[in-house]
Image 1: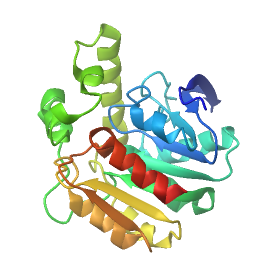
Image 2: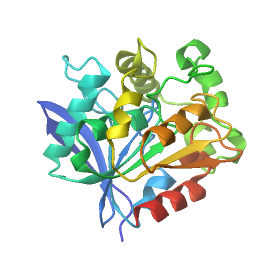
Image 3: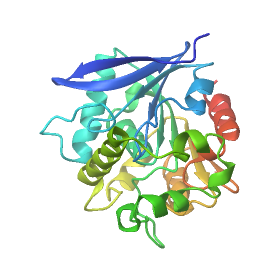
Length: 261
């Protein structure tokens, strides 16, 4: 079974959206966080052994273009629903990390009929009652990366991801991704005050995965998601920061596979 992706560009609203796709079986759409897709990682490959994985780059991230009118997270939600329509996917499972988790939650409360199952990994979107979501732009890329992982040296793909000096093109993409994160997620920063009040409408089976040592988005936010969505299950991974799919790949994939089967 091929688990390496085919890359294509999907036309949505006159804009080209980069998509990587691989695998077979029920459709699983993966929505990335602030660093973009980071290409095709081990967790993509392992999930593609069991599902048809669709991994788009959100508009303005990586090689995807952003239409000029797309300026807010609400715009992004509606646009991504349109993207699924262009793929002719009437019902899918959604897996989102960080801002991708927030996006998955917003899509689910907007059109619950299109979501089969929902996986939220260290998802933004909810304001913590205590503390705050870390301002990643205040700390800078290097410091934020240190904060985002429990232990960088234990990441299986560390050298491939971070062990070399990025090219000029890669640095430009990093800046572009940061600019569009600010565009979509600023004021209020990384949350929607309405979302906690909308989540109770969901009757979608939901798995919430969080790193116990997440220093970017507090575990409390995961607990709020679990409490707001009827029947949601929360899995907390020890010695894990903000990127469970990268830092605890085998455990993460096992949880997702068991939940979606």
